[in-house]
Image 1: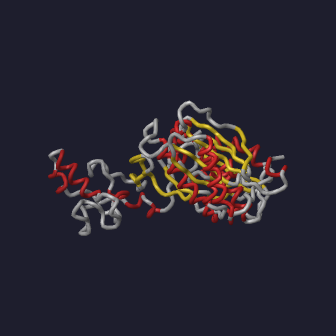
Image 2: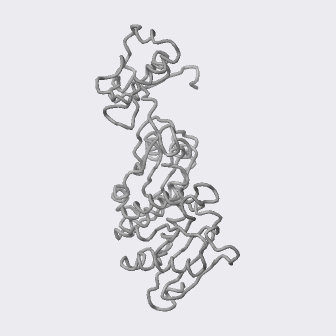
Image 3: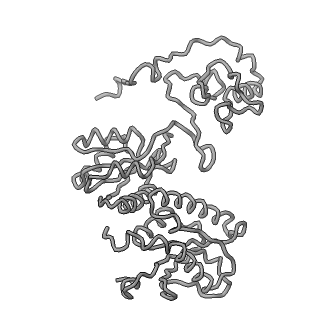
Length: 145
Length: 223
């Protein structure tokens, strides 16, 4: 049973896949689950935002996440030259597919940042939760595969 | 390679409605190279289809499998086990693969998940352009290695049309280079412009699609 169901009320579940290089140097990279402020944020640190494959993002949504936030470095500051641009293009294409199937393109988004704190990452999760609020819970929530 | 692109998801959903269990089959050869039908695409399309069907209020189980080639019977045979568990197949191979599956498993509907578009080369990352029309009477030896059948919008055989743009691009598509301009430039660079004046034999179009379905027989390879 997820944190969402335990509390008996809908709390958007947002998966945050972020590039470790976006963080303020020296801080512990957030990982795991944080339920606070009416949302459930699940953190997935990555060596670069380009590590997200389209299949990963679709499977996360298929498993019931209400929103997915991909966080990469600012344009031109990718440690792997253009990894963040590649991630951005993948996200853009997948957003159009999500719109095509009427699941809502707002369920997936990419943002950029540098020297981010844990609080800043959580703020991005909250921003995504607000963006999907109008869409309601992901209809895939609780669906057995 | 043979290139293809996904059909619109709503079109796929309308094919799959009414089925209980569908096997989504990828092909790890040509369509994998053009990022339309390989294992990665299977792994992306399967959850997308499940979500699309759910939003339509339809419940269809989507199983998935990728084989090395859907155009070779030996590889197709590997699907025999999975086929028993489904009532339809969605193939994201080229039209050859779809027909091979349909022939081997004729008791099931086999739907095409992609539109096969051309024989092409990956010109740049993310850009594939047609290079061959499989016309059955190759003229590349006479046209400096550039195919006017596949690469000219009008398949002209004797030089550019009057619509070629001043910058050497095609009048039909400003993003496509006029192949006859390319042929001219290559001939000029080789110092062989005079070859373009040569009268060439008439092309045998009966070997192309105009001549009906093709069949190639090699007695030396037959059992």
